[in-house]
Amino acid sequence: MKPAMLMLLAMFVSIPQTSGRVQEQPDIAIQNFEWGFDRQESFIQRIDYTAERSGRPEDRLPLESTSNSEMGNITRQTVTRTEAYALVKNVGTRTTKAVEWEYIFFSDTDDQKELKRYKFRNKIKIAPGETKFLSKDVKDRAVSRRQKVQIIRIEYSDNSVWQRAESKSDL
Image (cartoon, rainbow, N blue to C red; front, top):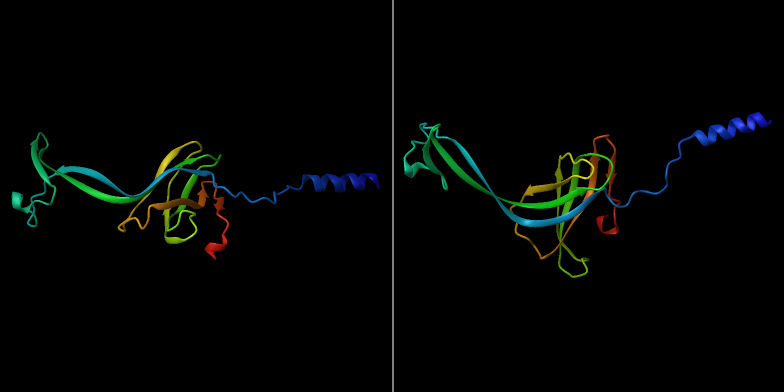
């Protein structure tokens, strides 16, 4: 009887135990965030003299300048994009492959009365300890000065997923 009991006990102990506790906080820590950040990017390329664009100064695109260089005639264009961003740090032990996040505007100091919520998704690899920007282009102006960013879902490179538990306000 003792060997059977020991065998049963050994089988029970060897079964992997799963924790009943769900991870409440994400492995991505928000360092900073901003809505309506203007980012300018400049592009340089050779001038393409086609029928649509003659190369004459009056036919240039807005903010386009030209110059001669050893590459021939080139053009420089500046594009301004307005974006929402969150600077985040992976404080966990797994590498991410995608992060879903929300930018929330409130009307009160207690952050109880929500005015507007925007949901975004970035496919982004963030290794443990790395800090990166999550960003998306936006057209709307900030609805309020009272703002919050929260991580709602993380997909990891090992195909596991963390997801924020739904609160009463989400239902």
